[in-house]
Image 1 (cartoon, rainbow, N blue to C red):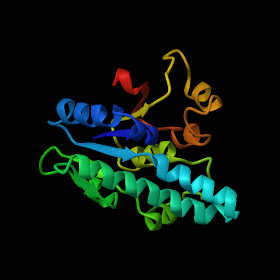
Image 2 (spheres, rainbow, N blue to C red):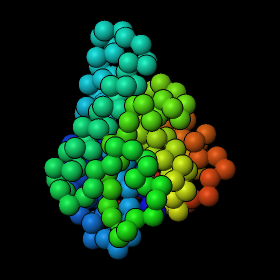
Image 3 (tube, rainbow, N blue to C red):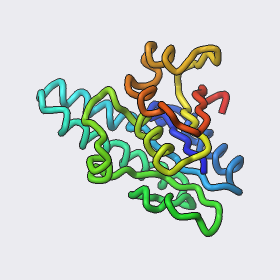
Image 4 (cartoon, rainbow, N blue to C red):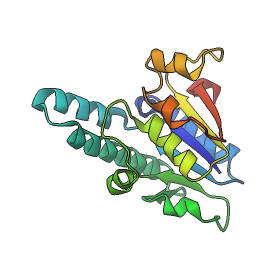
Length: 184
């Protein structure tokens, strides 16, 4: 099983369609899970939290809803993909290769002990998912240009991946690739 996280900022460009088409063409014969970033929906949560000063738990719940909105957007663009609101869908072997869109559940993430913090974004949630389902690979597709010589820690220091991603990927067996959408 492959996990492919599509950065939320891709929705602001035609890059999102390109990435979805690539996934559909390249991975049609194997199970794939798309993890959507929160995109502009998550940006609105950040703005609202700054304005209203509500707590990180509320912001975390709203950011998960932003990911769910992006999942619905992807489903609207690719109705043949399967929307999955729970990781239980990925824990049993698929009957046939499928392209899934993960629409994460706040309750499921809370039960897993995922902290409510902006240090944990959809990047780390994709890593958590990949580890939980024992995926063979995790690919983060970004809008930022990626220097392939950089380490994950370098990418964290530049803010390209979130602050907790390296912790979520400690002692994992899956391969990790971080790429610019043009290289996908």
